[in-house]
Amino acid sequence: MTAKEKISRARTQLVIFQPFFASLVLRLETEPRPDEWFASKGLNPDIATDGKAIYYSEAFIDQQTLRQVEGLLAHEVGHCFLHHSTRRDWRDKDIWNQAADAVLNPILKEAQFELPEGAINIPDAADKSTEQLYAILEKQAQKQPKGGGGKGPGGGKGGQPPPGKGQQPGSVFDSNDSAAERSHQEQEWNVAVQQAAQAAKQAGNLPGSLERFIEQMKEPKIDWVTVLRMFFEESVPKDYRWFPPASRYVANGDFLPSILKEGYGELVLAIDTSGSISQDQLAQFMGEINHIIGEIKPSTTHVLYCDTEVGRHETFTEGEEVVLQAVGGGGTAFSPVFKYCKKHGITPKALIYMTDLQCSDYGEEPEFPTMWVTEDPSLTAPWGEVLRMLPD
Image 1 (cartoon, rainbow, N blue to C red):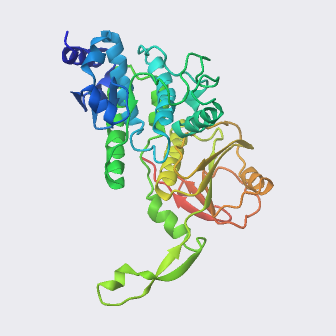
Image 2: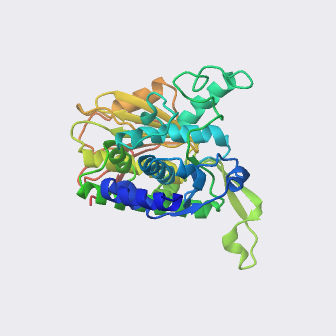
Image 3: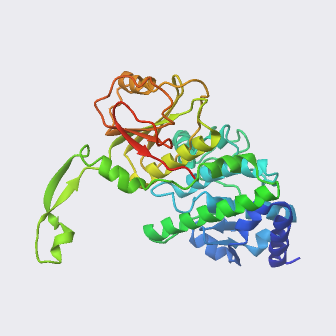
């Protein structure tokens, strides 16, 4: 078979045996490229994606088995739906590729794809975000002697290359689109993933790791941009400036000062993980939190999981991918969250508590504003603001 025929046959095999990945792979054109094209982008001449197409070296594909090509196509489309082409920002390209591969490989392994020789394997990678793994690999790269050869993610330990050296086949490179276009691309992939997951579920073939990932992508029921801007209006420091002037008045010839805001600063998001919270409610809470962080972009976000005590505390900085791992399942108490914040010196601009409000232990009202988010229209809180999240 020619390289083009092998690619076509591999796509057909995916349709039969891997409906989730097939649905996504079929969205992309597969285009051959010469070695010079890969070199111009600083890539190895094998296979790569920018989230809009899959580009491959014919000589490389000729050397692969059909099973290996299936895995490579799934690998590239994984980079697409995990948004690896739009999230790199300032990070080193080679180390970012390795971190992206490390996150993706456990998903492919669970789906029983054949991973390439030398595939990156980092313990507990499935529980970390690409940004978190990047930070680990970057620190290990800084400890490497010049020229590589040390231990760490590479240097011969675990069969992995030194950071930035000899990556496993299959790369992702940046989309050159504007921020708005990249955001639109991510939304299109999110919709495609939901559709692909539905098809795979009907076929009884959706890996558990993907199901958990997709649950966190649930669309929000609340317009968090509008709600939080109004909620924070009094708590976000602001000042006035003459340049640029307030745009809404310029058209009438009036030049008035605009408001200068310092941003949303530190935010605490608490999730009620008690036994009264259903898995569907929990998934919706986590989906809402993903959208709060993605839309509002606080400088630091603390996520606290609490039943009768705080079972986990996760911290995310602006631009870091959010990976949520809920723990709990016991009784319900709200006060531990506020005691935890006080004990650990966390004084946020605001705290948002996702809960069913099935509790009387609120504790003392904190100095910072608090919002309770719940689906139950009949319950109220003794203090703070209650926001109704309408059920489906």
